Length: 267
Length: 262
Image 1 (cartoon, rainbow over the protein chains, first blue to last red):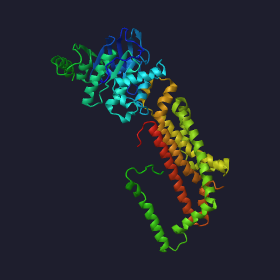
Image 2: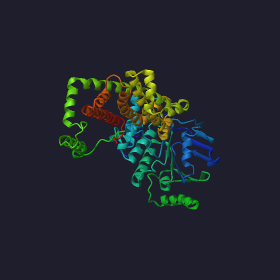
Image 3: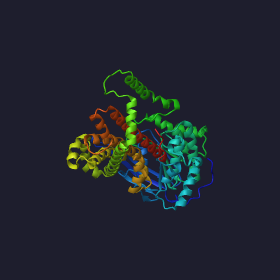
Image 4: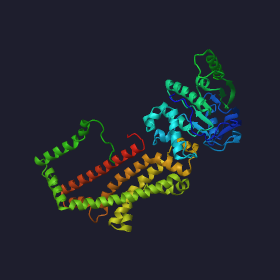
């Protein structure tokens, strides 16, 4: 990472509250044609402290991405409550940022304009927006590509732009839905390191969904292991390792193997 | 429908496209100069060139081509404008789509030329009738492609707009229209091609006044094959020119919107 100083922009929603609280979250999908109900999430309970890095790991179909969509506010049909700083969430909001697996940049906008999309409705002056956008492009190390279009940059770079767009509002929670799932192994490892660095610098709560156990253990303060049919929390593993973490460290390996053992039993 | 490809690549590739037309003219010239056919209906390339020169210098050609192009462009603009309005209404409003969509889908099944009898009775054989016919030709592709483009905007991008709290208006101008632009442009492009085809059709079927189609009719009625061939060449060249203009415009647009040229 090129820059190490903290960002000067004023946070829109400082993460000083009581964090993110998921209370008894259940979710069903109804198949109108087959007249059947799919039980996707069953009684999920989780308290996430402000500034915590939570990774959620699970096999496909365990409802981890659905859970993220609920927190994001894209899907409001569920049972239970989601509280952010003690207030129930309604719909989408700028205090919750997202990085999708597919970068979802607008192909007709440059890198700079794509990051600025995050600030479109933020209560900032045009000059403040410009500065904030520039700072966040620097944060992800793409200052030489501000005028490039998404089709001109690599998948890893596009995902960094998406991270900058997700952070540019200074949200109190950043949700990441398998953000590195479509990248090659080398790029993935580099971006994991960068993401950890950004998190340490910005102190934003992160909820990171992945199917990669290694990634979950590398990034998370706690790893939430989910299991499918119906999707629920199997257990929560504390990762009490100093950062930056070393993948060849004996304790890292034993924690990773511990989490992996859950999946061995499941399959 | 003509295909829309323009040769890419090196200069030598560019010239290969000339092989077939040059060969055809050579064979034609041989056939007429060697007297392979005694029919008066096989005219020589020289005769066509002379006729072309006469048409251009006497001013007849300019009258015909300007009348045709004026018709073509007015029909194209009217049809495209109405098409954009209708296409946007169909694309943005579910209600409008449900009420008007089925009727429009039935309407567009009617062959364009089936409108001629009705149009000639209602509007006569003059310019008004022709422009109505041309507008109709331009309207349909614009409506279809505009509506399709707006309807097939990726839900993933619409979710991004929702996440960042875009208003309905911001979503329309900031996501839906830019995303649909390539498709909308395809519609306008087709409208340009169709309206030129329809111009000749209208002049041929609603015979009155002047135009390049009327030049063709004159030629065929008087067995002047040189005039017919001249007319055909002009029609082809104008079509080619319009195609080229549209391509240039499309590339500019794509560059402006950061979409790689195909």
